[in-house]
Image 1: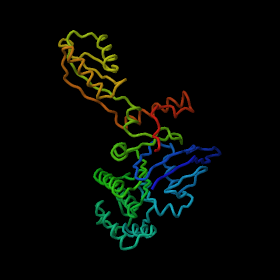
Image 2: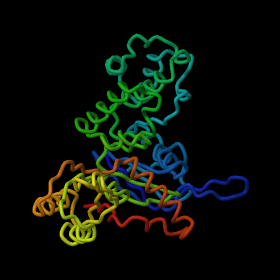
Image 3: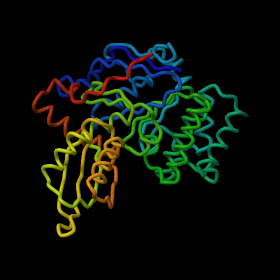
Image 4: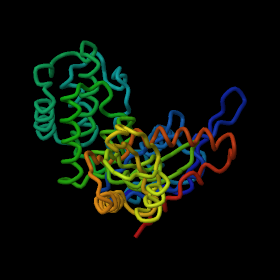
Length: 348
């Protein structure tokens, strides 16, 4: 099932002022995609997810799930599973047991009782909650409540999953198990998943597409790899020996023959002509740049002791984006969309 968002806007009134949470959003997510929604606090991520889940209405624009308008809330809720990262488990019934909570919500989804029990027990075992099935929710730990919320979303085997910080409160082992299960739902059942999270490792491991939102606008729509390449610097760290070394000559060779620039350079052992450098590609890929640098040094009679490529993490890239965003908001408040030059992902 696909998600289509057309010219979607949402404004709120706060102390007499109009707050723009979403500003003319247009997005298409194809059936079976696993997409990350990333942005700083207050960017509009949760607002967008809640609109898709029919919890709040947009001010203007439209959104469709499998061709069904979100205004048809009963139909939408039958095909969408959702988790909103609230560790207190406020959307569970505190005075019901874990099992009774899950069975109640399964019944609302139209699942037959026998099948619901089978799925619930299977998921409780998977998340090591079987011994807590008869425990009142009010007596659960934060992590156990979070697991229960995720299980509740998965029991109907939904074709669409809207996940806003779904593993908030999970321990490391449970988080890994949740990731494996979400990938299985995506690959085996074909569930379309929209994930909002600040867990950058999860986004890198799970998703193939990144939608970046800031100040209520879509800033970028690309793969996580393309975003990392554009938002933060990739470079190669090099420790090498090169007799008859002249910095200016070396800098020129790096620029013209390797298509790169020197970010950092120092003498590690001047008596033995050993140097350390960080070099950033400007013309070729990182691997091609490394190959060209290697050839240059070996042909000049030098030796290479260490050559270590550095690809920026998604977290590094996001922090670089935030820094650039703050700078642009001061210089050009209305030109955030110009921050990166990555082409937006085109629909086939």
